[in-house]
Figure 1 (cartoon, rainbow, N blue to C red):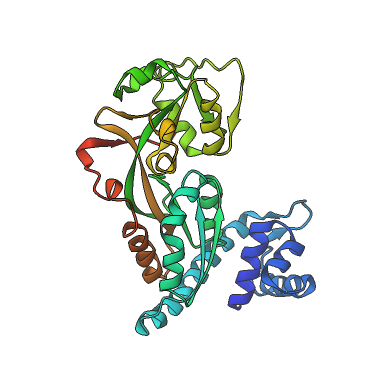
Figure 2: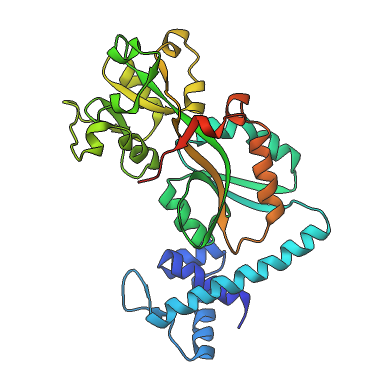
Length: 316
């Protein structure tokens, strides 16, 4: 039994296809298949049901895959031990960031972080929360930056900051008469939302009074977007409002548009932004450097946000 064989097994378990797994491992399909068959012969058990398309794990194969992940994780800790003794932050870093954070948080720190750690080979992907969780569990991603708490036992969360929400209103909207917004003022009928799969969608809906009562009215024009920028433009056309995280609102440069932003009465709704990784990910130095890299480059208004002035909106 070798670590290479276990890595091949994990690749097939992830891709459910021998050809795609071989490509991801940079070996030929015959080589990968032969090594997995050799491992199955040694164990005296079939790991995959090859009669199914896509390929499925056998009941015993599922247990073997879970154990393989633990073995590979422990092996990676050996690399981390050596790196720590050399005081090095090096190697690959596969980073996933959710779409409602990526455009606003990455420009704050990622270039400086890469410059400070030239021995890191950083790959950043914009992924939804569900995708980040799946990729962390499959060991095809090292670290995620997203909204928590997730309550996933296999993942470790490091809360970094609380980001308040602001309301962005259409020109002339009645809510602009108020200096600050009360959550009960919001309705699902008027709010523009991100589409399904974005955690920010559920948080926005939870603040709408009619949604909390189980009623879900909708715009005459039904439109849901995959990014906040499009929602802002829909609001600019003169209809309703949308919820924006503080960092996304800070990107609005036009003063006339900034005048259509409203804060909430304290405690203002906010989201908890965290760095997360699988419990088997062993490179603590990289995780801590990433956390400090984010914290050190946050705007003062976010870095100094007082806990008694905000409240975390749960994920739905």
